[in-house]
Image: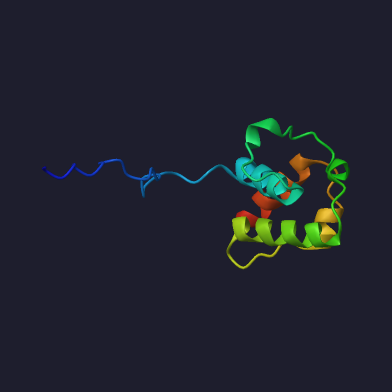
Length: 102
């Protein structure tokens, strides 16, 4: 019997020239991942949602700071005290946007 041809299905990955997600989507994804959602859709998170609604513990604030620092890049760190002073998701987006342009 002839051998069955191998499937030509490849694992789908974005093209190497795909644009990265927008900063708002990246920040929302970071917040939702920190909150515990394994495959978050940033579209479900309202920018006006209060950060206090997540009830993050100290470890989660540190994790979120690390995730947002990674988005910012350029060696501009996001600190836990900065995050703890953010009232809304939009405030976090604004912080990351501001630090990304420095």
